[in-house]
Structure formats: C-alpha cells, structure tokens
Image (cartoon, rainbow, N blue to C red; front, side, top):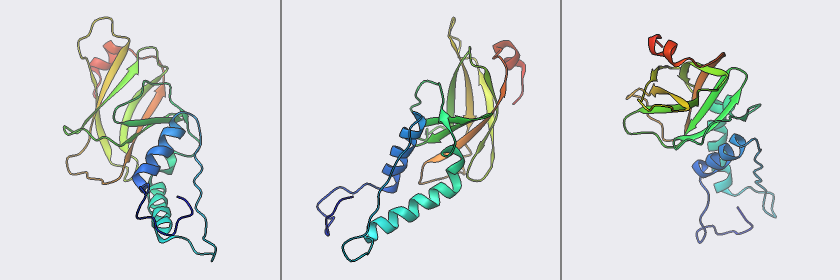
Length: 178
C-alpha cells in the first residue's frame, strides 16, 4: 500500500483486486504474500484494517479452494481461476455469466471425471450436465453448471466440482443423469 499518510491521490487495491491476484497466483501453483504494516506510531491505516477484514471474511468461506491446492491442468477460463486437490476441482468465479450457465471444458484425455458441483460458501448443490456441442474431432468434453438465479454475490465465489478417477467416455455421459 505504501508509506503515504494520504491515500486519496493513489489507486488503492480493493479486496476484489487482492482476491483476484491471490487466485491468479495460486492457480498457477504459486503463493501470494500480502504485507500490511503499522505506521511510525504503531497504528494500522484504517484502509488496511478494512481490507484485512474483507479478505479474512472471504477466506473463511473459500479457504478450501486456496490452501493445499495445486495448479489444475486445464485451459484458462474466462469465468475465473481453477485450482484442485484430491478429488476436487475448484473454479473461483470473477465473471458470472448473465445466463447463469458455467461451461467447463475438460480434455477427453483427463483422468478425473466431474461428478457433481456445489457452491463452496453454502454447500448448495448445483445442476451439472454433460453437453454435446456437436464439434467433430473435438479434444474436449463440456459440462454445463447452472447457478441458481436467486444466488447473488458481490464477491468472487467458488464452485466445487467433485471428481472421480476414470476415463471420460462421452457416449456414457450422454446417457447419464447428473
């Protein structure tokens, strides 16, 4: 943030900006260090206190998608950032689609198959279905996740996708009811 007493002349990062920087870093297998420090009198700037509280509140709900995760070997998503651990894939959504449909693009060669999806913050189960978009020789398969129209969030939110080990078989998925 800097050593200035008056922050009014400078752009100050918001909690949203810092969460974006955090998830971008973590999604690439990195980590993120944030340094808040007191002034010469031992006092924190009120803006830093506010940011620390907002980040802490977000982490209370979404830390599962941050701590102990690794890079997910998927193409970058325009919705946000992927992370993964064990049998879970996480998508931290910064760009919610207006139609409430999140389309996952998973390589046919993947060894983890999506099984179910939920909102991490409140554990709400989300409808997920396999979608055949009709492109011959496509090296990917697609899953649509429907967000509830009633779910609103001013902050980025995380979708947890439970996966199972196996091969993706598009013909079998077309028959499945998720």
